[in-house]
Length: 144
Image (tube, rainbow, N blue to C red; front, side, top):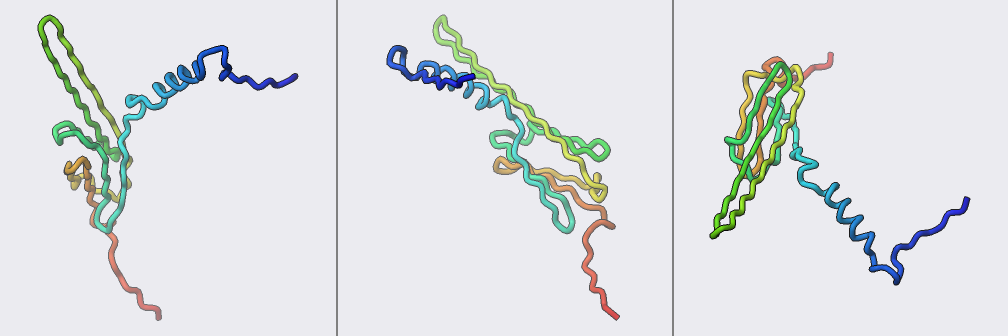
């Protein structure tokens, strides 16, 4: 079997014709905003709580729903926007619908009764307190 190099950049056809369509369709699939709707998340732990920061700019606090079922914390948001413009006999209507959902399994040390959330500057901050017996206690141990 012989391998032959294929060069579609010949002078007989429009230059890069196939590459234009290939990149157009591949970009439409891989760079589609609807493909990846999962926001970026930072999770950290302090001495008294677990903190989840979710980057969700452009939303309002009314758009979020947070639910705790057993040890699973679910966060989702849904936004619907519609713009309508009527000029003479022509009507243009554009709508945008976006949503996301994330779920987090909480450890046994998390206190489900003490969860608070705040949305500020495009960041949803969820603070999950630890149970009293799970909080880090500073204790000095003397060696005898």
